[in-house]
Image (cartoon, rainbow, N blue to C red; front, side):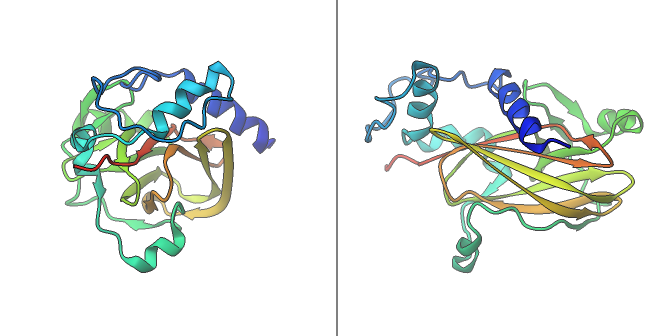
Length: 217
């Protein structure tokens, strides 16, 4: 498999998909806090994205996603900042969510989602206290839990793309358990973080996490 080509295609698709927050849009209503503008010398096509990711945002920006992340991270975990842990077996029994949110904001009850799962494979989600989601905006330094559903299990590749002023890519080989596997992610830098995996030549959906600095006060 040509991983570089796959990564470029997935990144391009992610930039074209609506996820509820339009790039370059002042959705904070003037609530931005000024910072060094590293986008000044960049192409117009990416400068707006860089400005959007670099500017600290008020705490209210994270409110819709508060159930999906933790702000208290053990100091020793910062050694692995921005890393995704190896998969561990996750028992879904007794931990089923109420529903799932797709990137376009569509919500489905978990019962409806599970009923269609027989025709689906290799899903990736962000686990919350009551729901799962495919998109979240979180503050830098926080952590969240990724859930990979691989019905048959197996060895595959886990991909991470980070977009700031450029796109950096990383992937690793991972052993996924049959059913659900859990992985932790610590947000060590601002930017758009994109995750997906491939097992048995079947790619999962793309999960997007926008990581921002939080404005003081």
